[in-house]
Image 1: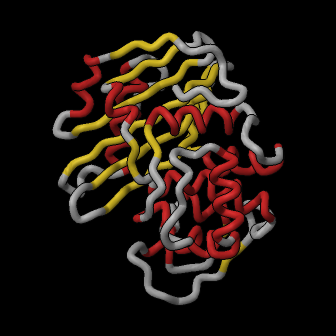
Image 2: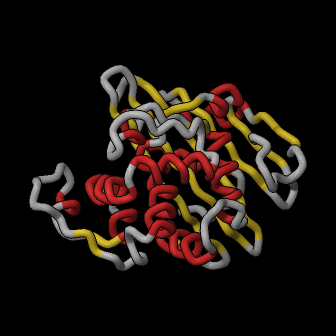
Length: 254
């Protein structure tokens, strides 16, 4: 895990090649950080260090920046759909920050990024220490097809700093984003996270990043998969992650 300001002591790292069974048909990596034990569990450490476009996982930081700069007031702030037909039916309507992250609405976050503007966006991405922090390219697509890159190791470190309040954002902004990232809750546990899918002519990449709170503990994770087929996407990365967390006895079986 990269060492940043406020980082815990270097964690003990374990490689788990047996997790390959969950990645059948895909190249990929899995990283789990357990702060209570200060240990890292990794499948494919080299893959965990490789950087890829963040795609929609950048919505976590984009949300924080939008709130902190005041271009959106809170999770209920509406941005009106401009009527342009979208590839996903649920995108063809007005959205709030909360509904936009839950439905991964690309146009909402593009509008948010344009409101923030290039100069402020660069300052905040650099201040957050997000991946290579390179937002060169177009302001409303740099996380989809620009120069921005982040690794699974870096995703986990970013999520830990986000959760622990070590990023340069107000407690209010952090709490709002934590609330909208919740995917499911059950007896004694809560799963929060975000998928992402990189669609390029030469390679597809799927992400699922987040954290699992269970019985008073928290575990941070990041999974990526990649390949030449569209099946390497965020939905599949999420399914792989769930299976791994269940196999590790951290997440209840479906």
